[in-house]
Length: 218
Image (cartoon, rainbow, N blue to C red; front, side):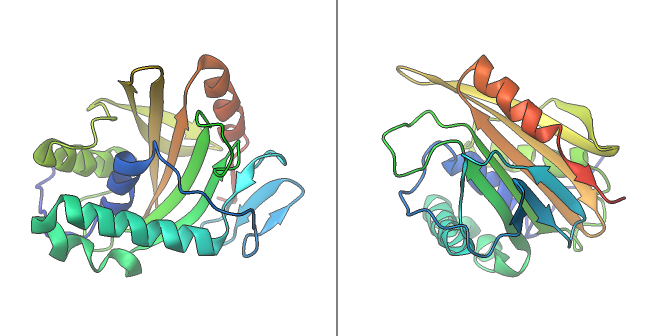
């Protein structure tokens, strides 16, 4: 059993996405800084690529940086006693890709979304698989009483022969239900996480088709 040490600077990225994923900030379209070729997002550092539909909105690096700052500030406001844990996370987290089917500045709210993040887990030697990382996130969720969009059951899923574990979650609102999945695998000293959001079975199938396009070099 993993021993939880809440002084570790892990699980911030996924936990923040759990808290704030339902809402998106308006922004202008700009994909500068991304290596997008022929409808693919390619990442040489972690050795993978994924198809991105050409009509989907891809956030620029500037937008990702702005999101990261906003999420960190809002998380600290919500949990001031954990300020020391969260305030120095910039060096441990990489926001790789954030794409929505619809432009966040449009009037369409129920937009499916895929976000890919990587978090340095060098200071957490007990995390060896994706379910270990999710276990930390779940324990923090239970401790804070926030981020309810996550179940405590983790399921194995392979993408391009890489083993991911994922947790499902959903939450009902007045006129819609939001569904989320949180996939995590371990690559070297990083937890590579894929966070998806959708609002219908049709959107779920669309998201799953995109995820099945993932290819890893190793």
